[in-house]
Figure (spheres, rainbow, N blue to C red):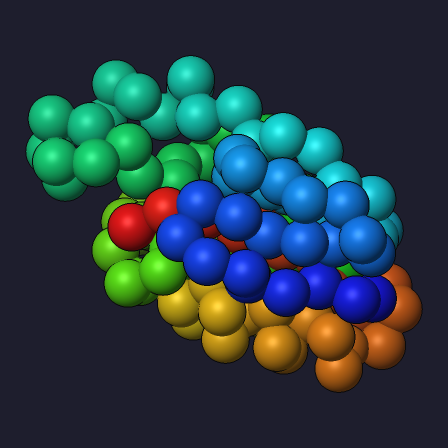
Length: 117
């Protein structure tokens, strides 16, 4: 997979540019729907990643790109759900997450990538 965090607000995946948060499941991108998590915003000051979202649990690893500065809050319930499912959760700033995904074997990891903060 050819993926790169270009700059604050932009990711390139296999030549296509994205200016919104992405979910990668089985190598296929889709837009992250933050709507279900917005109700938790008051407690974190930012829309966090919560289990209310459609999280791609279908691979042994889930890489969460926490943004340019690593500020995306990940709720404890996400960590607990990953543990219960036997999915290794890896939280890194988005640039580092993209580097990890470039070297991952196909099918070994899904991802949620935050493109700002």
